Length: 251
Image (cartoon, rainbow, N blue to C red):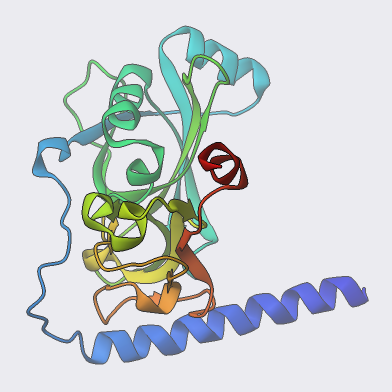
């Protein structure tokens, strides 16, 4: 009973934090001059889905055998958990293509239009909604998609997103030019993002980093409407001194 009460208290606290942030974000989204990364329009696909009536291991196996991926779409509630779920199946070849082209991390930080049909041959649309892929499970070895979870992402939504980092400027970094090596500590960072401002990735500039210098989460350049939900003092990357093995080789 005590454990359950603690979990409920934490969930309520998390929901209140998101609600307060939602109010503040809705009140003002500041204009910015900096050109933040935008999704590549080349991958602005509509994901096509069909209604799935039931769930279970046998049903999932039949769906995969037919070239479909068992999936779920949730209603956004507190940025992480969802309700009003709808069971669907999506085309395995379409999901695999998107994951392969974008990479798993950028697939999970990109919005898509989702069209739900009675069946894949039908032109009728039961529901058309913008979604954010929340999870994708890939088969070990083949990377075939096994299941996908989507969360609805209307413009009013605030969503918790693990945004991937893209490191640039390695070729001109003073520290790397001196023979040091790049120690990447984090490859994604968690933010609460207004749905319309979810970045596909965050650029991390290494061009001025010297030996033993590092960048922290708080140093990342993002839209001011994004709220970091990890410690701003947590390191992201460091230019470390030469490896011990390299030092031995130079002797």
